[in-house]
Every structure is written in C-alpha cells, then in structure tokens.
Amino acid sequence: MRREALFLLGVISFFLMASAPFAAEPRSPGRVYRIGWLSPGTVESNVEYVEVFRSGLADLGWNRGNTEIVERYANRNRERLPELASELVALKVDVIVAAGDASVHAAIGATRKIPIVFPISSDPIGERLISSLAHPGGNATGESYLAPDLYAKELSHLKEAMPGLRKVGVVTDNSDPSNEGIVKALQTAAKTIGVELKMVDIRPLDDLDARLNAMNSAGVQAITGYVLYPGALEKLIRFGIANRVPLAGYTEGLPGLLSLEVDDIQMTRRSAYYVDRILRGANPGDLAVEQPTKFQLIVNLKTAKVFGLAIPQSLLIRATNIIQ
Image 1 (spheres, rainbow, N blue to C red):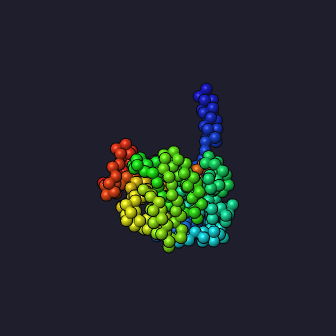
Image 2: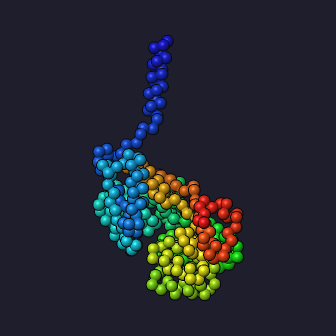
Image 3: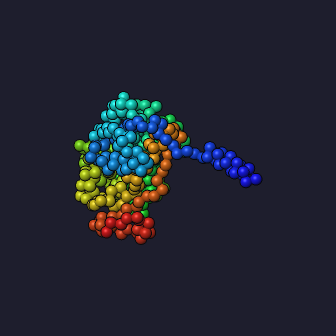
C-alpha cells in the first residue's frame, strides 16, 4: 500500500512538473545579444535613461557579458532617425529600444522583423504604432502614458488653479507624430471647462518670440503644451516672466505653475522587462502595452505668489509635490 501510494505520488509530481512553466531561457544561451538604443536626443540627455535601463536589465540577469547596447542619437534632428534606424537594422541588433514616438515610427519604417520596445510612447494606438494595448500585434510593444489624456487633465488642473481662466495658449510641434492626438484632446477638454485655445507652433524657433507676442496680444492668460521642447523652453520662460503668463507642464521656477507628470525614469527601467521577455523568445505582438498607475501633480506656490494667484485648497490637497 505504501509502495502504491509512493508510486501514485511520483506520477502526480511528474505531471505537475510537466505542466508548470519552466524558467525561460535566452533563445541562444552563451551568445551576446545586441540591443539598439534609438533616440532623437543627445548622448548627454540620454545618460540617465540608458543607465537605468542597464540597471533594469541587470536585475533580470542581463549584464555587459551577455548584452551590448548600440546607441544611436539624432542630436535633436528627427529627420536623421530613419537613417539611424536603418543603421541598427544593418547591424542586425536583436531588439531596438526606441525612445520617443518619432523613434518608434523610424524603427517600424526600417524593419517589421526586429522587435521594437518603446519605453515611453505618448499615444501608440492613435499613431497606429500598435493594434491595441492588450494585443499590440506587429513587432512593437512597450509602455504608454497616453499623452492626450495627460495634457487634457493638466489643462483641467490649470483651470482649477486659475478659476478666471478664459484664454490659454497652446504650444504645439506639428513635426511631432503625437501632436495631432494631443491637440484634439486639449480642444475637447477646453470645450468642457469653458476656455478658448490659441495655438502656436514652436517651429521655426528663430521667430517664435514674434509668434508668442502675437499670442499675448490675443489675451492668453496661461500657456500649456510642448513647453519642455529643447530650444523653446528658454523662450517660453522669458516670455512668461516678461508678460506674467504662467506655464503648465513646467514647475522648476518662474513662470512654471503646475504640471502633471509620469515617472519616465521608472518607465524606462520597466522597459527592460519587455527586452528580457523578447530575448527569451516572446513575441512582442503578444506582450500587452502597460500604462503608469501613478501620476505626480506638482504645484509651484512660489510662482503663484509672484503672479498673485491663490491656488485653491482643493487642488493643493491632491498635489503630490508642492514647491514652497
């Protein structure tokens, strides 16, 4: 009886082990995998992101001994991204990590075979980068903060911070693939909260000052949009200070008033998870796109005080960071 029981237990254990998922192994143990890193920015602006990505890989067992990161930067010239993406394809990298939607578009244009991971995408469905969040399809997947919704919510916070707000300037970038979705979301939100939007494209930068002055003549009381775009922020800061117009989306100093942000550093770290799964044999089209669950509402009371704004307590109690 005991012998029969032991035999039965052995059979059950065998089938349980057979049905349990084994720890995934790299497709080719012992080889060095090449990971392409494609960005519209510069080496300097990507240092922190590349390092946190490496750290995320290391947590999953990938180090400099079994992976190599091949970096390509457009140095803020997006027109170079397709060329750089083709270089990575020619180098036969195993995965392309595409930082920013423009990079994702360039990578998809260069290859439909090499897996593509986006650490932070603004609107992958609206830009037709994927089929759906749950089932991306194709060769690209990653994380999205759904920028249109984020900008729309930030505009609502701006209206709450400035109850008398009637006209808002929106700085756009018509060369950015995510621009259309963000503008549509802002227009919808503006109708809901009863504000009028005045659009201004940041390009070309050399005459942005004149276009901002024209927008000021139209009576804008605050500015939102692509205020962090390299080269434009300095002009917007000078404009905001000179004309006492607060900025949303920027809070480090005058004239920044509030911003709604995601933790892009942690999202970049999380992108290592996708690379890990792919290098172990997963199909990127089967890996669901993730969205952040935490957002940071930052309010700069210094700017509010200088501009004579009384931020409602109802907004302050929801802020995750208040700059005194």
